[in-house]
Amino acid sequence: MRIAATADLHFSPQSYAKLKEQFERVRDEADVLVLAGDLTNYGQPEEMEPLINVLLRLRLPTIVVLGNHDYESGKEEELRRMMVGAGIKVLDGSAYERDGVGFAGTKGFVGGFGRGVLTAFGEREVKEFVRASIDEALKLERAMSQLRTKKRVVVLHYSPILDTVQGEAPEIFPFMGTSRLAEVVDRHGADLVVHGHAHHGKIDGRTATGVAVHNVAISLLQSQQPSSVYRIFDL
Figure 1 (cartoon, rainbow, N blue to C red):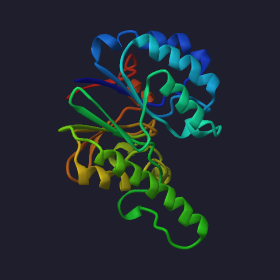
Figure 2 (cartoon, rainbow, N blue to C red; figure 1 turned 120 degrees about the horizontal axis):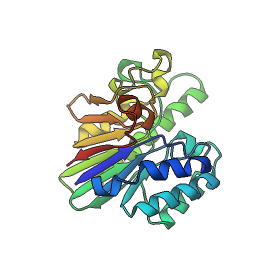
Figure 3 (cartoon, rainbow, N blue to C red; figure 1 turned 45 degrees about the vertical axis):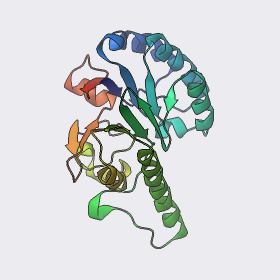
């Protein structure tokens, strides 16, 4: 299977023509399209509707997770319904299997990496923050436990490892993701993990057990090669 993956489109109606042109070859180059969050800029249905139009014209199976920008206006459930109604697979603690490849995904959350992971100690607000991070890890656990395929792809918005956020300001590393997600991946095993969110991070990294992790934020891909709006992976 050839998988085209990208993230952080931050789509608005004004970018319709450009995005349509940028994706015109993807159907010839891939069997599946994966979008790792931040599909819209402000999480508005008015942004999602033309984006769905672009995606449907590709005539390519499409798998997505939402990102933090898609939650901005509190209309994430409406956005999800719009995509599901159009036949797009939206992963939110859920899994999808196609042609012998399993996809497990969730948005993920922040919280830090390694020894720097924030723990649930102190104020109620801190505990609630940590609970949101743990809940997303549990959703990924549930999604991965549903897979019965030998080949596995994990789709996240936030990063599960520190390596692929290197390049961002160190002060914001804890807000780029959390290694709680990587712990789940390492327990279940995967062939490939893709994420976005870290626009100025690093392209490639690995979890503690060696699972390949790739940052597919569109701005990062274009910084490597201006014409690249997605990356192709072969499984």
